[in-house]
Image 1 (cartoon, rainbow, N blue to C red):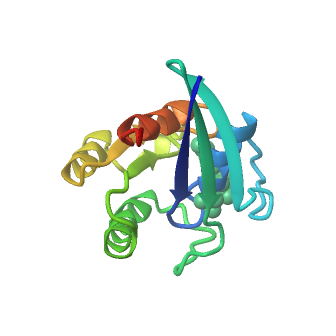
Image 2: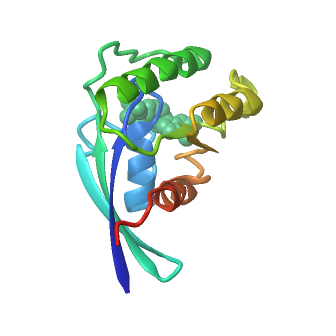
Length: 156
Ligand code: GDP
């Protein structure tokens, strides 16, 4: 069976759930008191999808943010700073990377601040994958990674 290796790097404000997304994907579990050191900075996970093995090499950027926001629940704000993350990525990242936006914590339906349509429109405008996820309730986590893999052209 063919094996694809895919490098994935998570970026975003502190507290948005990056480590939890990785933890859910790799271990299929959720720790509400996740400690920044629990989410290791590098993890791998291999999944089989459509007769291929997809090996994800995942870097979590915990603690490296320039503007830490440890107690912020201001979801709208994390959506606007997302645009800065994308800008920096486009300027300083490698060319031809696939960008995927996870609208995480979609289980928190009572405090929704970002309309799915707005997030989707933004993602479309920068040709990014967009998926609403919940690391807590295991919604769309595998789909997020598989969608990334589907967007990365095969090198063979
Ligand atoms: P990071 O700083 O971006 O790596 O974020 P963490 O993974 O440390 O998560 C920050 C907080 O948000 C933790 O208290 C998590 O339990 C919580 N969290 C992460 N993902 C979700 C989610 O999908 N839903 C809910 N309700 N809380 C989440």
